[in-house]
Length: 178
Image (cartoon, rainbow, N blue to C red; front, side, top):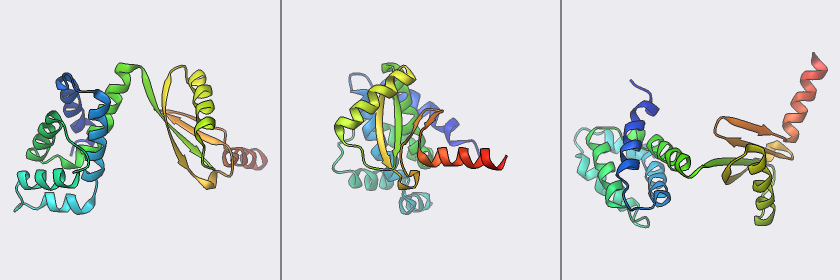
């Protein structure tokens, strides 16, 4: 079977080109919600049942996302994905669409792993420093990982900046055992 990234790319690009006057960020948020729902094993099992029609699966997903009003283009994408039996690719479609939106606006997503919660003012300072370091605008998402002990680890695309205590201890361990 082809990789999900290969399957997802044409769907993400088609939505990106057909977005029209809709806000790309809004559509990305809607796709993220769809991706989260599509990744549920119970829904996947339901959708994979050959007795269940794609239109029924569509209605279940849209019913699940009552709080999120899906744009017509996103609903059309969902119908197409379901008709082609590609529901498993929906989280990857969302990720690739967000990458296209970020590339267009010159922004990158950054995941900041921290041992402790970071408040708004601290996060603004951290993001400002990271934007200088990575030389681009960043959308930061903070994930608390107590096992880092202290410091932060930042992932921007395929780049990683690890200033955590855990990483420093690992470096010391390697240096002492070498």
